[in-house]
Image 1 (spheres, rainbow, N blue to C red):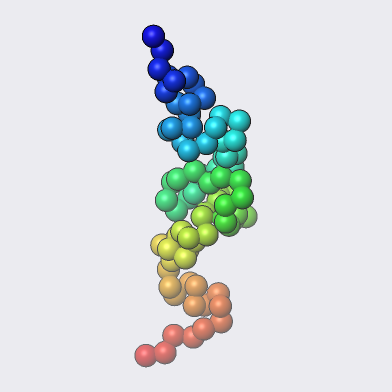
Image 2 (image 1 turned 90 degrees about the horizontal axis):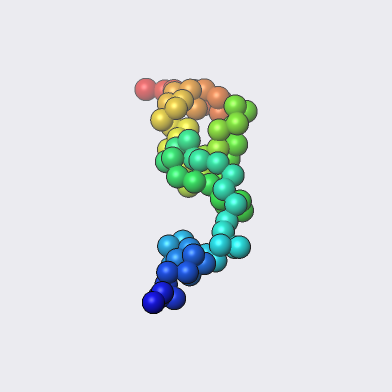
Length: 80
């Protein structure tokens, strides 16, 4: 005998929280954390096409460019 939880639609809902016909559309992967970015999520797209979650953006930019380059690009001068 088959359990109701064995039905593919029920299994999908239990595994993902979504019915199969309501699954979010994936638009890419975050270059910062590597997780999937779904349609409607806050994300930034670079000139090279890389996507970065809104919440990963600052850390990604700091890691990639460094504080010196960011300060220069924003017109700040380092003083010591």
